[in-house]
View (tube, helix red, strand yellow):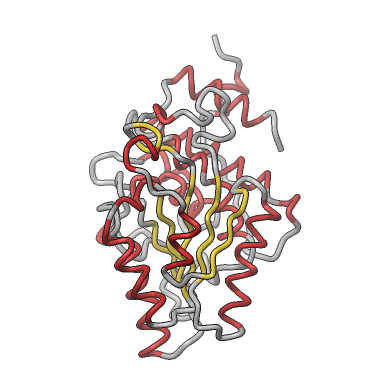
Length: 300
């Protein structure tokens, strides 16, 4: 029999966080709350992706709660907002959990992940009208193309200072459309665009170099005209260093888009999932979820 506290850990709470400049040591509780909500949602869904969402939680914590992306959680239609596009749409449990922790919608709704009729589909759907989802995505390589189109509109047509962020997986770099989009970002001098690559070296069929080698990633991104920085995707100060580079590029009107290559571990935070590609596309069982939540609760 589970004790009452453990049972309660499977339920969603009402914790939310503000979006403001923070010291690096302030992010771990936010990232771990995102991870706990990912686990809580996936175990109820009985399907979905665990590894990538857990591994990218630190990236999302800094992006959404570090003052880098401007938004109003109670008005995600605000015309002055910056935009984020999750090109690797299968990783959406981390985005859903992050948006709920920002107060964009009730955290209790995370319990409906992948259910019939839910706003929280297995891939982001603009037609679901969930606040914070800017476009439908999931066909790999297309999300970043849409995001760069948004950045072009902001920079070349509306001539505003809006920022556009997009995250791809490293396996996604095997899609040719990613590099067509990257070429356009450089050609049109989109210093308002920030490309984040979740470099966990895993995809559903195995290690990225074994499926189709995409390395050296940094050299490729630089060759396509991006100001590129490699960071530890679990070190919040290092992630801040990457996003600060982007803000500086935009402020100084360098005409160079920014690429942040964040080296992460799939399933980070849960020891039995850590760096295991087998967790790319499956949820935890009930017992595994309890163990994961207990482990995550042992940290800040």
